[in-house]
Length: 189
Image (cartoon, rainbow, N blue to C red; front, side, top):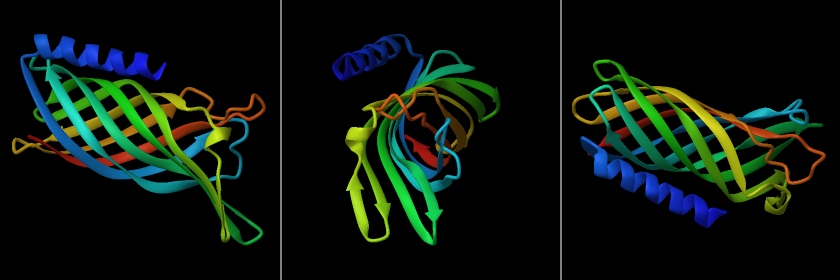
């Protein structure tokens, strides 16, 4: 399944590269405000973490482009129980493929699907840390909706919401979905 996703991503990159008016590449980093939703996500507090990665922008026209990204994203939740704060830290390699629409000079909206590949998952409580990667699914599917602004210099700013579509719990009994609000700064070369 992972090989199929990688091959599909390369095919998309190649297709847009052949037909694009302008191709630019860049980097971005920012802060994540992550949380879980679902039937088993009661009484959980969000985790503040970060994301960092690369961006490619394939300009189809002056008003429309396709923007695939490859991001390392630290996500998860926190919970305080009887004075002890516990954390669930899940780290993903996310691949969003976004349709980007220019709505004003430098201002754009973007939306599209995202697939995330679980890199690590740990539960921490007090002095103990436990690897819980085997209790979570290896892939996460979500939808992305956001707003961005790019200056003529290439410096850009963005805010987006990633709404989890798939249950990340590997057992059929739990219902947990990743939801992340991201604020980022980047530079297009």
